[in-house]
Structures are given as structure tokens and as C-alpha cells.
Amino acid sequence: MAMTLQENTSPALKKTFLQSTIDSCRNLFIFSTKTLSFIGGLVVSYKFVEIAVVSPLMDYLIDSDGKIDLRMAAVVTNLHGGLSSILFVIFSLISQTYTGCFTLITVCAAASIQGLMLLWSSKSEFAVVYAAIVFLALGNSGQMLSEKFLKYQFLEQMKTKKESVVEHGSTQKKEEQDDVGTVNKIWLFVPSIVGYGITVCIAYTVPDENYEDIYKVAAILMGQTYLLFLLGCAGYRREELIAESNLGKIYRILKAAFGKRKSMYPISADSYYWKDYKHEHLYKQGEELRLSPRVPRLFTWLDKAAIINAGMSPETEEKNGKLCTVKEVREVKSLVPMIYLCFALFAFSLLLATGKTFFVAQSSTMTPTITERNDILILFLMMEIMDKMSRFICFIISFAFRCFVKFKGMDGRSKRKAGTIIRIGFGMVCAVICSFIARYVEVRRLKVNKNAELQNLAFTNSTKALVPQFSLLGMTQGFVEGGLTSLFHGHVANSMWFFEGSFSELAIGSGKLLIIPIVFSNWIEDTVNASHLDRFYLMLGILNAVFLLGFLYYSIRYAYKEEYPQDEKVTVEHTLEHGHQPDPEFSSALGNNNETQLVDQGNNSSLYPLYLLLYLCYFLFFYSGKGNAK
Image (tube, rainbow, N blue to C red; front, top):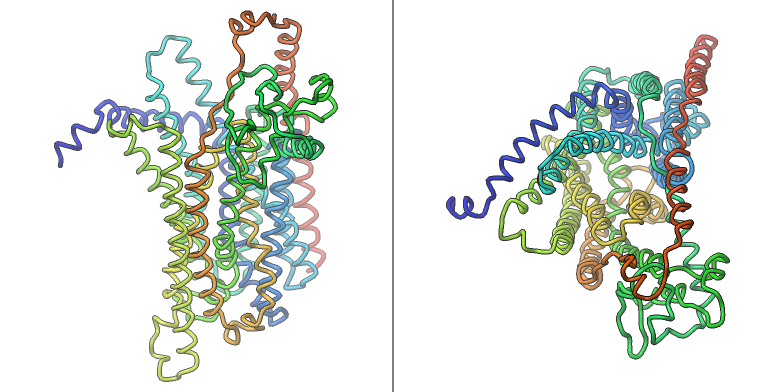
């Protein structure tokens, strides 16, 4: 066995992995002195706020002197999560096309600080608490944007370094360069690890009197890291903005296709608007020609957006928004199978919403191991750690596969698709197990509460009994969310990758809103002990099992079998053979547009004094208010 591994494993890759690890350590030190300490500090504070403030929000609402019952607390918590998802989609689209991440991060971070300050000083006045929750939902978008901004800055630093090495003459193979980049990305988890460490320290040092102490620490930490983020403004790399948002492209193609809904499918490839791309990636449906990839029948009419009307100029139709190129239509069609797969994740999204609501309510009625609030922090910390461990295990497995020669002959895209489908499927299996374990724990908890003879079974009614379901929930989240991202990149056109974050947030965050009608069912009452959470968890387990079968069907039918080869432009030789001359004015204009796009960014350092003044005003206003209250 050892000899077989030695034969299949490439010694060069082993050496590359060790060398890339050393290089990434050196790159981290260089990068941290320039950017990581400025952006990473904000990421750390966001991670702490997520675990210590947002995740246990349900417990804070229930424990507010009985002013709010279980149903209303669940509704408010899920509305906060749903609003966060919707706002992230909006802000993500704005940052891609108009402003860049930096400007929106400053707005979101300021909103987070305001929300934490209101919670700190609210004293359970629910008009103030609800306003704070809205500010936190607004500020929560900044967490994903700051992580994206940190990754962009890190990769830009590495890209500059690679370009300088190439200019001085580098013989490093492309495969080795990819391994170095992959190992470098591991260091992007450093801010999360620091956030986990702060959470552990707070859980064992902050007294268990009220949540206001935690909110105070979070507000101060967020405020200081926000100031540090602003101080590093001058050293950030400017982001490239896309000319048209993916949502705008989707709307334009839907509009053009709907306008030609009565048109017949062509039998000749020349009837499609190819523009500067080769006539390829077609398949026959009877006598008709359709554009690949194949999609369910409900969306095949999208091909009509690229059909040329006889007797009309294609350029004029395109200018009027009535015609789209084949390349654009194929890019949008590549997104369709992902929509079907996301419907299969409906039960999983309900389970995630349950973890932030009824799992927390369940823990608040059980005997604490440390203290009630600190136990909840530790449980969510364990869930986050299992999430990251699941993603890291998948990374190790995928890296190990590349080390074996016999797997190198496989097509990279097919291998990645198969791996991610298995990964998501395993995550959904974990969701089924998590639901049934949660039901088992709830049944045992109810028996202990009703039977006085079982009160001595400390473990059954202790928060330790919740460790398996929180750990499985973290594993489920790591496998499914990470796999969904990987599957998106493996199946969808490269130009649509900007939409990945928004798409995943809509797919996974939908359960936060869809669970609200269930809250008003007969299973959920005003208190946890009066409710039938065991029946609700049983329903979740059955739903996840059913939707797992649906996911396997659609993933094999559409996501795995269908490929999305990139469109190739017509070469100069091919153009000359067909008697067409390239337009030099058009080419130069296109180049100028690209330059303008790189310069005209939303990362405007001239706004830095305004951001700093806004930060100071927040703290002066808050402290003056506290002084007057005293």
C-alpha cells in the first residue's frame, strides 16, 4: 500500500506544498504590515459580533423580562436575518457596478456601531431594540463585503508579486503557482481564528448578568477596528468595476426573449446573433437548433433573445435592447440549473433558520454547564469551528486528489463537479441526522421536565446534550455552502461569478423568511415547554431527506452532465478568410473604455476625512447621551 501511494504521488508536488507553505508565511508577514492589520481587524470584530451578538439574539429577546414570547422572538430574529440577506444582495450589486466595496463597508460598519450602541443603552426598551436590530441588519452586509475586500487585497498583492517575478525571469510551472496561491488563501482564515479566540475569552471573563456587557465590548471593538480600517484607506488597491451588473444582464435577456416569445426557433446557426464569436455550442431539438447548455423546458425560451429578426439590422436591435448576443444568452442559461438546485436546498435553509431560533430557545430552558449566556456563545463557537473544519477537510481531500497521477487525466471541470455534488449531498445527509438528533434531545428534555424522577439525569437536561446537533449544523453549513460556491464556479460562466455571493445568500437565506408562517402553526406556542418542537424537528428531518433526493436528481440530470465551454472569439485569420476587416477604431475605443473602468473606481480616498468625522460624531453623540442619562 505504501509503495502504491509512493508511485501515485508526485514528489514535485510534495516539495511544492512545503515550499508554498513557507512562501505563504513570508507573504503573510509582508501583507500584514500593509493591509491585513487594517482590514483584518474589521473582519475580526464582525466575526465576534456574529457569534456573540447576532447568533444569540433569540435568547436576548426571550429573556427580556417576559415582554416578548417565543413566537414574536422567532419572527423578529428571522426578519433580521431575511433583511440582512436582502440588503446584502442590494449592496453587493451596487458595489460591483457603482461604488466598490470600500465605500459600502464604511456605511455598513457605521450602521453596526450604531446598532451595538443602541443595544448597549437600550435597557430592554423594545422601540430602541427594534431600531438596533434594523441597524445590525444593515451593518451585517459589511461582514461579507469586508471578507471579500480582504481577499481581493490579498490576491492583488500576490498577483503583483508574481508579475514582478515573471518580469525578472521565472521558470515556475503554472501548477506550482496555483498551489502557492491555494496555500496563501488559507491565511485568509486568520481573522476568523482571532475572532474565535476573542469569543472564548469573553465567554469566560464577562459576568453572566446581562447581555449589555457583551454589547459594550462589541461596540468598543467594532469602533476601534473601524477607525483602523479608515486609517489604512490610502494603501488599498482599487477594485475593477463591471460595466453591467449581472442582474441588469438577466433583466435585459428576459425582456428581449419575452418580446420574441412567439418567434420560431431557427434551423440555421446564422439566424442567431453571434457577433464576434464562433458558430458553435449548439444542439438539435428535432429540426430546430438550440443553444447549449441544455436547461429544463421552462427556460428554453431564453434562446429567442438571440434570434435575429429578418430585415432588421442586428446592431440596431441590440442598441434598442431587443437583441442579445449568443454569448450573453448562454451565460444566463448556465445559471438556470443552479436555480433548480437551490430549490432543493429549501429544507436546508429552514434548518439554518431553526438553528438561530429554536435551537437557542431550546438551550435557554436547559441546565447550563458554565452559565446560560456563555453556554450559547460556546455552542455557536463550536458550530463555527465545525463549519471551518468541514471546509478545510474538503480542501485537504481535493489537494490530495491532485497529488495522485491517476486522477490527473480526468477533466478538471468534471472532477470538480463530481466532488462538489458529493460534498453537498453529504452535507444534506448531515442535515437529516441533525434534525433527528434535535428531535431526540427535545423528546428527552420534555420527559425530564414532566417526570420528577428523571430530574437526576443531569446530562439529558443539560446544554451538553445540544453539542451534537450544533456540531452537525456547523458541518452541514460548511459542506453545503462551500460546495454550493464551488459548484457555482464549476458550472456557471466566468462573467457571472460576481453574482455568486448574492445568489448563495438568496438561496440559503430564503429559509429565514419562509419559516415565519411555520412559527404561527400549532406546533409553536408562547413558550418552549408548551410547544411541540419535537414534531417540528421531525418534519425538518423528513423534508431534508425528500429534498436530498430531488437534489441528487437535478444535480446528475443537469449540473453534472451539462458542460459550459467558453465561447471563442473569431480570430484575425478566420476573419480575413471570410473577408472581414477588424475595426481599429472600435478596438482602440474598447481599450480606452477598459482603462477608464480601472481608474474610475468607488474607492475614493478623498472621502476619508468625511468617514473619520462620521466615526467621531457617533462616539461623541453616544457618550454625551450616556452622560445626560446619568
